[in-house]
Image 1 (cartoon, rainbow, N blue to C red):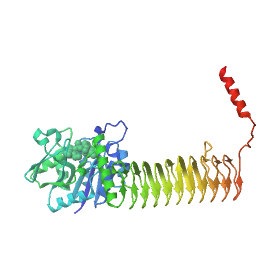
Image 2 (cartoon, helix red, strand yellow):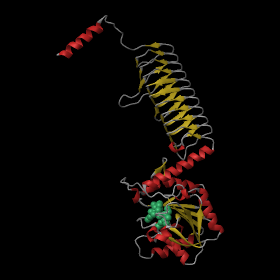
Image 3 (cartoon, helix red, strand yellow):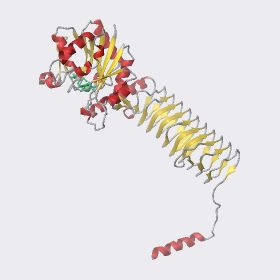
Image 4 (cartoon, helix red, strand yellow):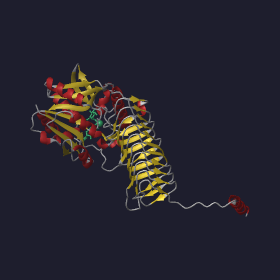
Length: 462
Ligand code: UD1
Ligand code: CA
């Protein structure tokens, strides 16, 4: 039996109340990943012979996110969910089962979809609706049953007070016999109406005496559909709890999981401790026995083992093992901190190899440099890598000592074991083992401090 999938993603998402041009609801991110990509990832774990994504408002955005997963079809005018399905008319003559779901249901799992398809196939249904019991059913289509059988899906608009009290809802996920789906659509779409609802196709099939089932799932969070910003926050929270729980079960400690944000593509490892206020996004991997936080922001980082990293902002960065970073260390792209390094408070690095066991304890900016092993970067060192137009790279050898307040004007090469005196401005290479001193000579004027003070006081009286 062939299986097809249709993902509805053509709506604007009016209830999101966004003024951003061409930004469809399904592109809004949760933990850094667009909503529709969660649905597509859940589906891509299953076997579908064809996957169709229906785009409309913000089509380019949807296409850029969804085209790696399947084929994009266009719904020209957003005339409802049934009309949207009909945009995948290319499937109409195929034999098989078609799964339909919405791009705004990011918590739906592959297990649930597979269970729905299995229930649909083993019961030989013509259509099966995935349903869920939710605490607040407002806005959802209600599942009206007659005994165990599905009698009708009732939209919010049609709800009498009695029907409003039904907590079993339509999740917007369905399995259909493909032929029946498209023939029912043909009949329904020929009728005059402003909007065409997919739930009415289900109702029409019931009226035709077809075999229509309602398959209920236990976990109500899976049904969460994001229509407005409040639901976006509820779904983000549920997703965060799901991810954090998975890592805790896996052997990661979370000091306060309510304040820890771990993106869906992040990998954590055993015996790492995530302290409060930690955000880890993008394609990040964190090894064993690290202590991360409090208060860190990481994006696309690869972190080895046994590091202690607190109050840091690290982006596109590799950290090896046994380092001690922060508080208040910031990296931008292309930084690699080698093992046993120490980078302390208020430092910034960009495009830097920072060698094994090297230290940069306070208040430095290092940009575009290869820094060797066992280097001491004194407080307030600056690598001046930019002339206003071009960027230049410097190389600093092993066991170099850069005195406090050094300014290294790139490009220069400082050889192994060289010593740069504090306060020097270095714009020429320093050979290995040499000492560079580049600053004005000191002159002392005996007793002159008092004279200066008296002059200043005299000025003040005037
Ligand atoms: C829909 C269901 C409701 C169900 C709920 C579950 C209908 C009419 N209602 O309501 O029974 O309980 O989902 O979450 O089916 N879309 C299009 N083209 C359109 C309209 C919508 O592609 O013309 C897409 C949207 O982008 C969205 C999805 O269909 O991804 C669902 O639309 P939405 O407006 O969110 O439907 P709900 O009001 O949530
Ligand atoms: Ca919805």
